[in-house]
Length: 398
Image (tube, rainbow, N blue to C red; front, side, top):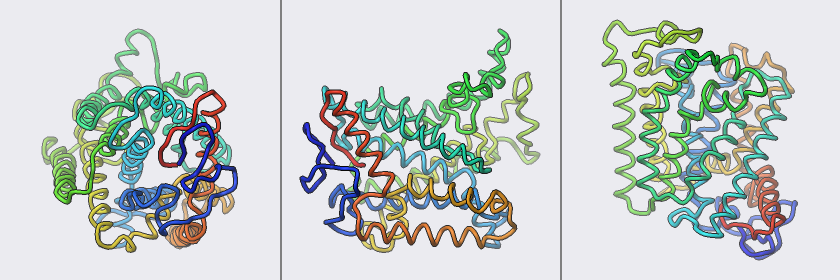
């Protein structure tokens, strides 16, 4: 990207609002040959999984396509969050975290990006689709990550583990604790003035839990993945976490199992501690956080492994993942144009059409341009805002 007083791209030309042309390899974009195709592919898979969760028809069991699509529920958004944390790590220096004045510039740039994400999220919310737009939550998570941009891998991974355990406890037990002093956080969170409570505690993607995924991705970005052994360790860790979460939780609950609605009392009272062990998607339990995070690690490791030998196989996913904001926005607009009924149709025809069209657009766009359209505008806006504040733009991926 750019450094110095004037905003310039990798080729040395000033960065303007028009889209920069691609000059390097097909999947290099504006970042050069060091771009991690496996990470882009993981982001692309997460994005398509989120689209499947929004538009697709899913069933239980794995004896049909609809059954396999059920894997997208919950896990896709977690993978998206982990890779988002990785992207924050790249922006803030990758293997060598920014320090001093450069760190200040990076923090300012990330803050501007958060504001822009919040604005895009607000626009998509105005379209009034059945899709629960996640961008406002992302904006909050990025702001919460700003104080930790200078941390190293080990500290970030430990922090992710702490939040993965403490976050679910806070989500389920802090509201009834606050209710003892007369604070109904669910009512407050529904009020526009209490939006921060919703983003942090009571919303669909509460920061007290989901920051574990951001810290996990940020920590992974601080590690060099060129050695094959490290990628294999990552794969093994992912398998172990997935097994511990998705198998360990039900095993600890016992054969009788439990129903989520029975375990948690949103209207008051103390939730049954078993809520911390259930594994249903979007439960935000300790077991689900472990399992979903582990699944994300498996996908990331698989992407890194495939990219080592056959990156071209990942081209559709990587192209889509390299412009995730554009594709995410496009799929919400698509649903808005077709009407909300498209979400409830008992067929995956619309899902297939949407995936093929959006993936095809991404691949064709990458043939000509270095960045996705919204990605480029957010990049330029953030670096120009940083410069306008009297700071040269920080170097990093856009």
